[in-house]
Image (cartoon, rainbow over all chains, first blue to last red; front, side, top):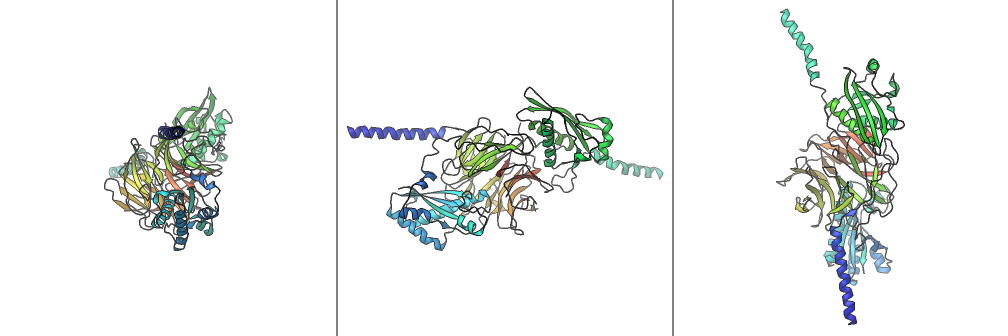
Length: 190
Length: 425
């Protein structure tokens, strides 16, 4: 009976999750008002940045996402996240020297069959925003495909491209560019 | 014999008059075109609003690409001048003005009134004598309406000043949407939208903005209704959902999706979200832009090893590569007139990004001088005469198709990815 009560709780809870997930799709979100200019004149007067969450999309926080990286990781897990792979300019080919890094990631994932990960594809700032988003996507997918080739279940690996939006080093040097053209690995759930 | 000579002489004399009767010919692509010279003394009426609107008019004359403002220090009658005094005609003629603009600015009951007179110096003809009104919160609107009617009456050009530019604004680590009138007046941030917003694009009725946001930790496509400020999800499929571009009817949208593994170009029927995949190459295909007749798409593809511009016939799916210079050509946009494509061009000569123009058949490549320090993301004005783009210094600039002038329209801030709206009612 006790188990039944607990079971019922789960059923209700899960139903609620689906209920809210269903609402999320149909709901339209409210965006805050456009701020009028602060002063008149020929130039644009940018208004101050708004409070952090002017509009909150229902469900926006769901699904781990970037917050997952904030989990305190130790040892092997930390090494897993800390080791990026890198790419040549305008290329999404896995470099021979990065195969070892990917093999290490595959053996970690083999040892932890419940771990799900996300691969982030990044580009350096050269080139256009739109193309770099596509390039980052190809880089993330290339890394994912290599892990799948090494035997990891594709369902455990999600990808996201950030294009040129999240450089590790904002400097405009070849060294910074090389560092920023990367595939980054994030553990979502253990 | 004498009679014949007289006839010939009469013909020679009549010829220029006949040409003039056809009106001023403006070569919009233009090297030939001479900007019309305009004298505009300071406005009469309520201060400081009169000076503010004068400054907006002055900036708009510059951005128009069609007029040059004669510097006020050259005027014999510096103003303020609310109406054109017929006895001063000779003074304007002396400094070489084609037109003189006088105006009076008043505000009453929540409305601003800009009562303008425009007189053609050569003929003393009154071209415009109208009071333009706007709500006091958006006083520049009166200037934009006036400037649009000036473009029409003096040069038979289509309106364009009653339009906005949406861009991505970087504030701290966040990127948000920002809109302003195309001359930079009336700017404001659209708050919210998540921490990272990209790729804004206007709907052809000017009522909505499609954009990419990482709200759900993935680049997904949303549609913002500017009147209600409501947002709906357009596409949130696995992979990237980016680079929205409406067709002229607003019923179709071209976009980039990577749901099948690599970035490909699709057309979405906006009403039903139905998708049609158009590209099948293994390479990156992105940044689609509809031709005005909706039959073709310009897009960027790396199928030959590096990004180049292609034009595809949507019905046959056959795509022609149109750029052969340089190794990085991207972000093509069709001109509203359909005869040009603007794109971001990495110049092999100086190694910098420039805005370039090319005909859809690949001929006539023309690199616009721009800032010379790295220019990206061109977008055409609604009449197709002007191009706005973002400079590497974080400003939005406006230039014309000949590159004959360059005007910065943003103030302090870091802006990118401008998209120019249609003419707004």
